[in-house]
Amino acid sequence: MEIVVQVKLIPEADQAAALSGTVHTVNEAANWVSSVALECGVPREYELRKHTYAQLRSWGLGAQVAQHVIKKVRDAYTALNANVKAGHLGKPGSKRGRKAETKPIVFRPEAAQPYDDRCLSWQYDTQTVSIWTTAGRLKNVRFACSAGALKTLREHRQGESDLIEGDGVFYLYATCKVPEAEQYEPNGFIGVDLGVVNIATTSTGYKAAGRGLNRHRKRQLDLRRKLQRKGTKSAKRLLKKRNRREQRHVANTNHIISKTIVIEAERTSAGISLEELKGIRQRVRLRKPQRVALHSWTFAQLGDFIVYKARRAGVPVVFVDPAYTSQQCSECGHVDKRNRVDQGLFICRNCGVVAHADRNASHNIARKGEAVWTAGRESRVPATP
Image (tube, rainbow, N blue to C red; front, top):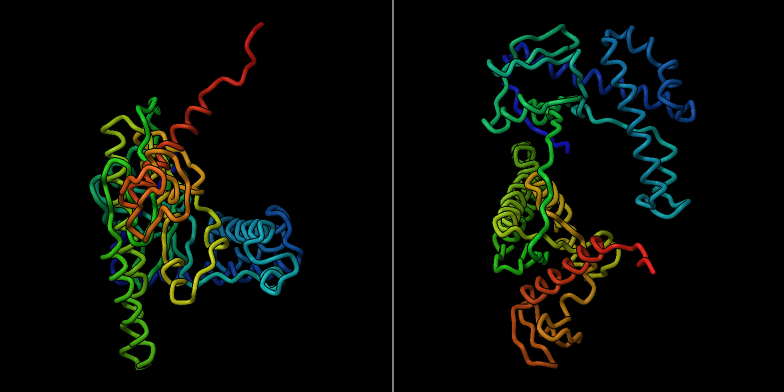
């Protein structure tokens, strides 16, 4: 499986200026290639190279860097076409879809630029890199990362790495191909119910409350509104400083939750059963005050974190249909909309069992996970007469 390891570059002043100039130059070149691609009807990569490669080389880009710029642009158009085809940009013929297809893709000045081993080399013992720039090859550029990340880089790094500039800080995102652990036969499943009030509730008793995270989001939102209303230079400077702070905090919280769930499953030799929640934002209709909470809900990120950590540990993961999991009694199986009294209370109208609503749902998800796993393991070959 492929994972991405992030390292922070610590360049000297002249090295930072060269790196910044390189990132801006290659993205300006990518914008030009993007306009040429649209004029030519977005040809294949080989044909696009005929129209743009010589010009890119005349601007001082290295051979490999020019190739990567062209490939980056072609990949961006491939992703755009896939999104249009999947309906992510509206229905066929919609204003948003037409605008995306008739205007060239624009790359941010600090957008990622891929590097291969011809343009970038790693020295793990000294924790430095040698990297190509428009000002020449930079050697002995220091980088910082954790001991575990350094070990992963040394043993499993393969393929390209991306150079990214963010608020004057440079990062390298290196692709590492880590072998997956052999998946074991699970002894039952842990059901995971995802939500806003409680981020994750498992059938084994673990509950990750969302109160602190929701409070953090509200505080950040109020502060952004206050600074935007003020509009002074210092307010704008503070807004830029706080950019993506909430995103990083949420990602760290999801890492902690997913690691806890996977460790519990591995310790008990159990599998993990998750709800299939794709498309929920399109299906659910909420009042305006509730939309911010729904669209800030990072269930997809948490699910992805659980999946990749489980794959590294050999823990089986299945996805189940979430329909009626909050209305069904985990004891007798009775389904009734009135069973869910409120957000946190479940009282079965049939057998009278009283339980925490999210805990009850997690048991239903665990049972569905066992059924899905069993169905996948059962033979479909007809019996021999």
